[in-house]
Image (cartoon, rainbow, N blue to C red; front, side, top):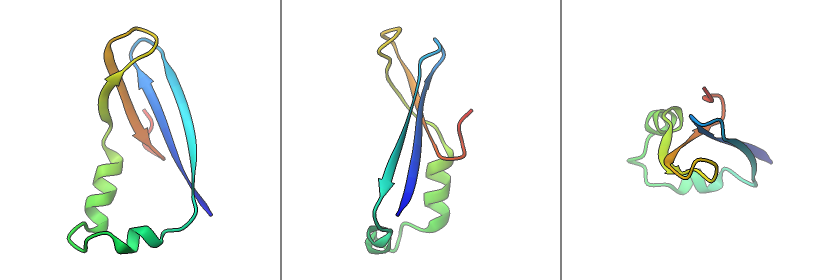
Length: 70
C-alpha cells in the first residue's frame, strides 16, 4: 500500500495536510492510454486552486501534491 500526500496552503497562514492511502495502482493502469505518465507528473507538480479558505474566508487555498509543497 502506498500513500498520497496532499497539503492545502493559504497566504493567510492556513495549512492542512492529508495522507491518503492508495490500496493499489491498478486503477492507474486502467486510465485512458492518452493520459501519459509525463502528463500525470506535470499535473501533480502544479498547485490546484484556488479553493475556499476556512480561516480568511477567501478563495485563496491551493492544493499541493507530494514533494511539491512550497
